[in-house]
Length: 632
Image (tube, rainbow, N blue to C red; front, side):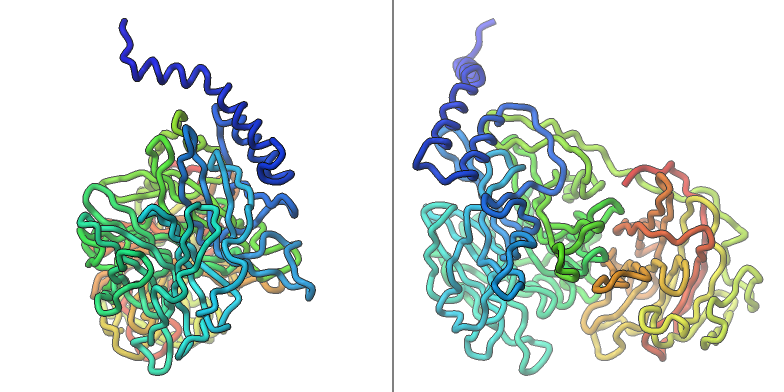
C-alpha cells in the first residue's frame, strides 16, 4: 500500500531517532555545556526519551550539589520547543531544597523562585533561582517570593510572582513580573507591581491577600490577570498589552472571601474554567487542601459549578477536581493544568506525604513535593484520574516529546451506593421520646434536647471537641460492624446570609472513636461564607504535629442540608469518605480520610461550638455499603 509522504517522514524519524538522541546526549555531555552532574543527569534523560516509561509520584527533582529536592509548592510549567525536541521548565514557590539547605544560623533557606529543567516530565534538574534578590520596588518588605505563573506572549517569557510582604505604602502583598528571552532566564524585573497592595474590603486598616496570580486570554486577545486568596477572595482585572500592568477599575470578584486561593485557568470547549484550592495547604499530615472548579463563558465570570452554584455565593459552589482519597497523599492543590505532547491534559500540583510531612529535622515545616496526574473531562467537568484523584503507585508516563505517545487509560472511580437499611440503627425521630438505641457520649454535658415528633432538636453550645471534648453533647449509638453508610438531614436556625456574627455554630455528624479520635462532617458559617467541612481529629500525636485538620466538601441548600459518611475497610485499614447533597437524592463526593477508630466506634450527632442556635436533625439512617471495597 502506498504511504503518504508525511508517514514516510514519520517512520524515518522513528527509525533514526536513537541516532539523534545520541547526538543530543553527546552535546549535553560535551565540555562547555552546563556543568558536572547536572549535564550527566539531563543527558541520561535524553538517551531514554524513546523508551516506554512509567513514573510514581512525587516527581524526581534533583539539585546537582545537594541531592534530592523535596518541596515544590505552587508549581508552574512551560514547554520550549527546540529544533525537533522539547525542553520543559518547572518553577516553584521558594521553599528550601531539602533539609541540608540551611543558613549559618541553622535555619532553612528561602529561595527566590526555584527553577528546574526536564526532558521527560518526570526527572527534573535544579538550574538555580529565578532571582538573585528581591526587586527594589518591594522597599525591603520581604525576602520571599511565592506562587510563580509562567506565560509566553509578545515573543518573550513572562514570570509572574508574589511578594508576600512589601514595604509599599500601607504594606501588604503584591504581584510582580519579570521577562526573559529564555524560560531559563536571566529575568529582568519590570520595576513595579502588576497588582499593587489593596485594602481589605471587610476590615478597615487591613490589606487583602494579593497573591497567586494567573493570566488568561479571551477570544478577542484581551489578557486578564487573576489573583487573591482567602482574605479578600479571588479577583480578576484586565492586563495591559505589554503584560506589565493591570487596570484596577476593571476589577471583578470571582470567588468569595474565605473560600479559596491559587486560581489557575484552562479553556475547554468554549468555557473558561478556574481551578482554585480550598482549605489549608500546610497543616502537615492533616492538610485539607483540595481543588475546586467553576466555569464561565468569559474570564470575568460569573463562575458557576456543575449545579449552577456561584463560586461567589455565601454558600459557594465548586466541582471537586481533586481531594485526598485516603492513600499516601493529603492536601493536593496549588495546581496548574497543562497538556503533554500527546494532547493528554495533566494536573501538576503539590501534595503532602502523610507518612513524612515535614522537612527532616524541622518538625512543623511542611514540605510539599510536586506531583502530576492525568485529567479526564467527565460531562464537561475536569477530574483527576477519572475521579480516583492522586496516584501513589506506578503510572504510565506522560508524553514529553513530539514522537512519544501516552498509554494512560481512564478507570472511572467506583461509586459507593447504599445497600439495605439497618433499621435497628436508623431513627426518623417521629416520636416524642428518645429511642433506647441512643445514649449521650458525655452525659455530664448540657444535653438539653427536644423530640418534636419530626426531629431531634438541640441547642448549639460551645466549645467543640478540639478545645474541650467533654463539653460536647453527642447523641451516640454503636456503629455497625463492617462497611456502612450513615446519613442525616439537618436544618439550622443560623441565618443563611453573611451577616456578622455567628461564626462556627455548627451541626455535626460524627464517627466517634474517643474524645481525641473522630471524623465528622459539619456546616459552619465563617464570616461571609458558609462551609461544609470534613474534619479529622487525631491523638495523641508527636510534638509539632496537628491534632485536627479538615477539608471543604460540597455545597448545601439554603434551608435543609444533607450529609453522609461512608466507612469502608481495605486491607485492614479504615477509610472514611464524606458526601453532601442539596436534595437528599443527588450526592456530591468529597474527600477521604484514613483513620483508625476501631470496632467500638460510634455514630453521633451534635450541635456545637457557638451557643444560641437551634439545630433540627430530621433523621439518622444507617445502611450497609452496597458496592465492594476498592483500594484508594
